[in-house]
Length: 256
Ligand SMILES: Nc1ncnc2c1ncn2[C@@H]1O[C@H](COP(=O)(O)OP(=O)(O)OP(=O)(O)O)[C@@H](O)[C@H]1O
Image (tube, protein in one colour):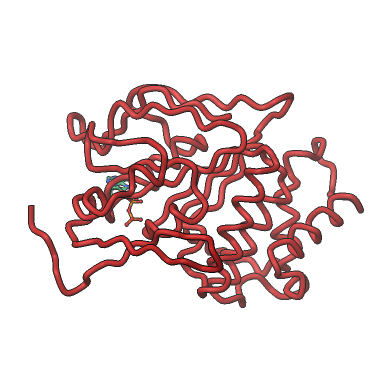
């Protein structure tokens, strides 16, 4: 599990991007973080994975017997090196290897299995820099799965993906949580949160960070206020299963 204890971050002293953020992401929980561009979502994730130090508060990872148990999928990733895609995924195994050890047959098997699970087994021998943006995003997800972190932190994991792959990745993340992992992801799509998340975190700015059950928190009013738009819920009835989706009126902005 991942413990966020009164986290606060300010690049400039006194100008809090976020402050007083507390939540415990349980095993089996998917937490989605939502907020407008520049609100601090990536900065928050960087604090969660140890790439940035919070100005206030603390983050603790609690996972049975695991060191470095957090897998991180960044938003964008560029490398100047022409790594083979399978080797990129194998990098996820690094923390499981002894000092100076190279990945072995088992590591290669786990890397290939992670690629198959994400649906990109056919890319194993391609040069990573030649892949499309969406293909790279799937490779980074496979790398995190191969790393077998008990906590997965993903920055807009579905942003570069087509509609079918968005659904596949969202349900894959749901499945990884159901296997006992804690999953934290950012998204600009409230529907993604409604589809698979247990919990949502809405970053309204500064100390106004709201955390709660996704379906309860993501009301038309809250989404409208968060982004300055008009949002409307629609309930779809598909084969007896009803699902609520949010539709945005792109022709109407709301100015607070
Ligand atoms: N090193 C830095 N120094 C100063 N300000 C920074 C630095 N890095 C990011 N920022 C600013 O902090 C704010 C939050 O950035 P962050 O990337 O966390 O936002 P975000 O919510 O992830 O945005 P987006 O939805 O656009 O990805 C932005 O205004 C950004 O310009």
